[in-house]
Image 1: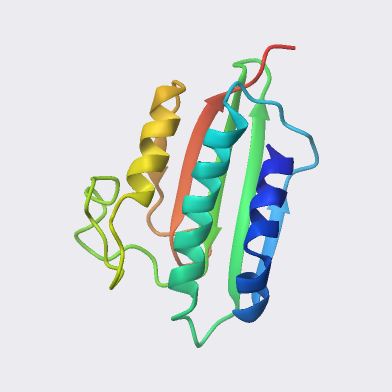
Image 2: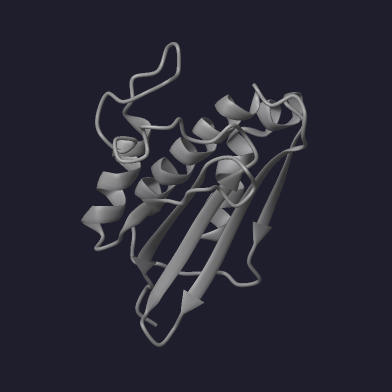
Length: 149
């Protein structure tokens, strides 16, 4: 999982640098999960792209994105949280944010978080919005099964 996050960050390296965003991955492991790497890439790119878009409007505080990964070997699950220091989710959108077509982006389609939700759900996981956000912006958490050892 950490390798896929790093690859996604590499794909957006220019934008991360141009927007002066500090990115941190809170994990000391190499977490193996039971999800296709391509699907996991789609999850992280959608979350990362949303964070980068909204961080571009952040002027008065540091622009930060943090990925936190916690494994529960006993339950065979991994919990992932993606936090940013942007403006967060607009009031009234908390319940609708994962619905198709819901967006506040001027040229958005409203499909990014829908894709995230569908991929996570297909793999017996749950995704949730955390309000208020951990870093003051948007925070999303999801869980997935660990790969068999």
